[in-house]
Image (tube, rainbow, N blue to C red; front, top):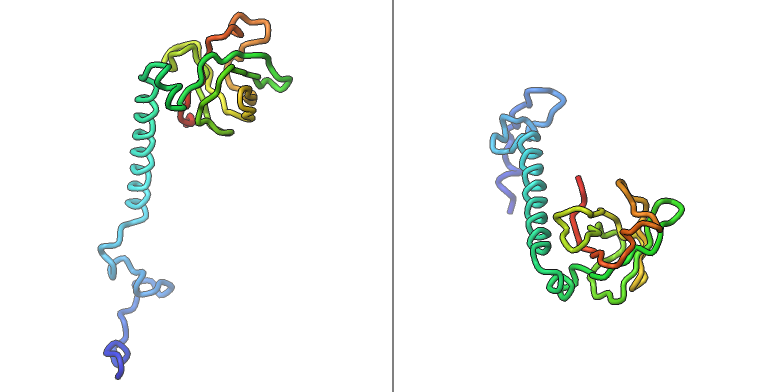
Length: 161
């Protein structure tokens, strides 16, 4: 038995542009979205996802420190133990139950990630109870600074775009 489509001898309509295939002619597929429409929808999707991620992070930031620590979203009692020659910072704590992984972007703060002082850093090396963060943009506390005192907190954040 033969397929009815293979028996048709009717040629397809020529494309408006001889270098363009008939089925790629915009008039032959009016329901196909334009590339600009597709890109606009993709951009909206990315922006919507970013906003949803930001809301999730901010909802974690609103919780008290003990709750953030218990859920693995923060480490309290972080001390800045020094700076690296390349401008990175060395940090340590007495207890780490966090979910943080190397390359996470974290907010080093004094318990309130919404307020200063705070420093956005990338976790470069996780050694359990000590960390190394690469050079930062902004003011890095120096080894003789009063900001080395305990009381800092790591909190997960979003990449800055």
